[in-house]
Image 1 (cartoon, rainbow, N blue to C red):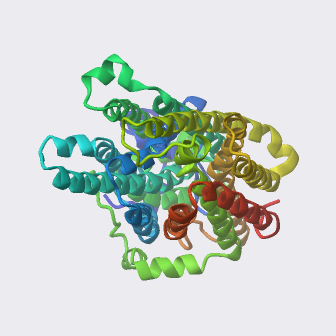
Image 2: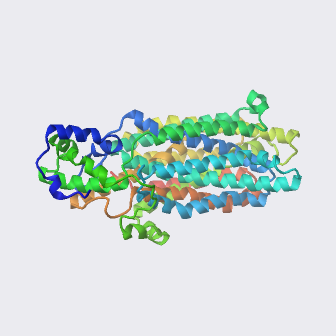
Image 3: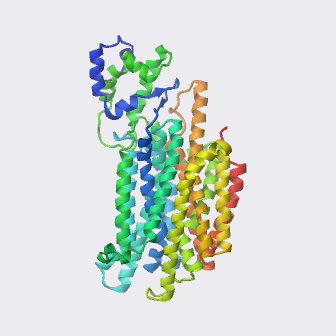
Amino acid sequence: MTLTKESFHRVPPPASEVAKADMDCTGEKEEALGQSVLRTGAVVPGRRAVGRLVMHSMVMFGREFCYAVEAAFVTPVLLSVGLPKNLYSLVWLISPILGFVLQPVVGSASDHCTCIWGRRRPYILGLGIIMLLGMALYLNGDVMISAFIDENEKRRTWAIVITMLGVVLFDFAADFIDCPIKAYLFDVCCHQDKEKGLHYHALFTGLGGALGYLTGAMDWSQTVLGYSSASEFQVIFLFAALVFIICLTVHLCSIPEVPLRYKNEEAKFLLEVTEPHKYSSTEDEIKNGYLKSTCTEIKAAAKPGKCTVVSQVSAEDQRQMTLKSLLKTLLSMPSHYRCLCVSHLFGWMAFLSNMLFFTDFMGQIVYQGNPYAPHNSTLYLTYKAGVEMGCWGLCINAISSSVYSYVQKVLLPYIGLKGLYFIGYLLFGLGTGLIGLFPNVYSTLALCSLFGVMSSTLYTVPFHLIAEYHREEESLKLQDGEQTGEHGRGKGIDCAALTCMVQLAQIILGVGLGLLVSVAGSAVTVISASMVALVGCCFVAFCVRYVE
């Protein structure tokens, strides 16, 4: 049914009809329409319950749990299957190159997705499934190949291929999934809840990482599950997969999304309805009977159908999906967005150069073990003990990240986002520098707490600034009388541009750091992390724009 302007301004229906329409407009459409509206036509989501925000943040717990498992075991797994050193950098290059090219496409596609389930959740579900597949391959690839191939050389080759494929798929999906998760939060929450939601994300990221590293630090080969499995990696995969599936399910059921077609019609409807009534709130219109009487018409105007990833609303929307148009959009971003992306790049380069090689650093440099030694030798067992101790250090990092996410809320009114950003980079740079200069077990474990400060900073402050930038732009459009949402970038592509820096950092590290490690050893990773963090510290202080 086509909505007409006359239908909005008819005589208010009787109370019985309003009640009947009230019963029909349930679920996601009812919640979507119970929101306030600006004069520009932008629908402002209502406040969310704390429980809903906690449910929304659970996916970060599951994602970081799986990330912690990968960070703790991917290097030992790749080395144990016999991956040549000259292919080591290739593993870290394939996934970030794909991510750097496709991340803006996915961000823009989710901005225009017309699936009846919402714009972001279909992508989150799909990427979650790819994460599980990748994790299954890299943790169980050696065992899977051994069951089908008996020849040693052929088995070794295929084990390397399957393990590398698993790592690439997991990294690809785990990096990609952060963009629709953040955009999902920004879509369904008001500004106050965005801030609260980002802090919950950081909290559960730390808790998930702590539990993941704790799982990796335990010796599962001496447990009942270890005896009944071909390897301890299978036990770890069982735990990680179970945790992630539960967390992903809770997240997808947390806050209903408004499908794009409903959102477009709703914004136009609300603007026309509220103009004759001095832009009153949606709730007032519900009480007056105007909104509920036409709710069923809105519901009928967008019939459920197949999930269409790319909207067919207009040819302009389709042209925006091309890579050329996306690159033009990214290059035309305001300078303060580009500066934020560069600072984010410095942060992730420093953080990843330390985290990806940390357990290997503990095994080879701190414990003086050798991953290439025979598996029953003292050198290899010493290296394995160092890897397990490295897992405890990463567990300390994750716990400190959760604690610091609450400390941030206390510090924010006093030092602002600029102070939080600067402190995160500075403490991480100093901590990694001391670890590189004094590779002692106890001092290294104590300084791992500073890793968590950086982790919490990277997961909250840049996205907090993105939310501030969008809020400022919407306020300026409101003052100019423009309608928000019809022109300019969506939140999805801005989050994607920021998340692209993670992939770009991996590309740079894969090209340069892998060569340095093969020449100078794992000690170079923490030194380079310290130097990059301190350079980023200066960039954060002088180049990033902060909204007053």
